[in-house]
Image (cartoon, rainbow, N blue to C red; front, side, top):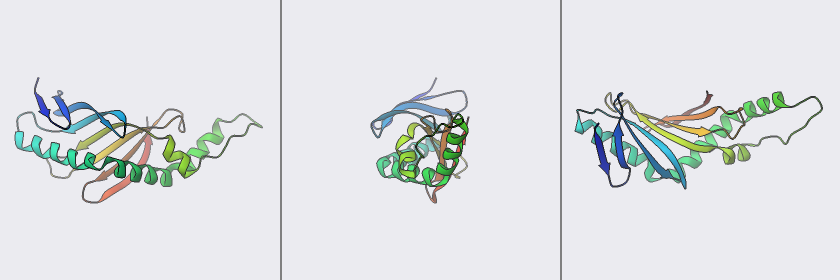
Length: 153
């Protein structure tokens, strides 16, 4: 098993799919980190680690932007799910974009496409039960920024 030690990201361990795995702290929260690499190519691994460090170097700003983007895209959908969960005659406070963003819980950052130079990232957030336990995924690229927000799971 190949392990790469990094002074910022810590111990990155390769799995069978050429993904480096670690647990890091971002925004006061421990999250999983997945970085596509190549167990046999240190040049690709250094690039992958560099791109990841760039993404997390200003994580507070990026996290705020990802939350705002997801809230803009998905709040209406969250309110539809909320309405579907209510019993007849039952009411609940509407989810606002602000409350939506506040409820998102960071869980995993995935950086991929390093070998093909078509680099992207996915940030996985817990939905705090807005979508009945599904995951919110915010995706983008270092060049173009945030591009999409969806739910899965």
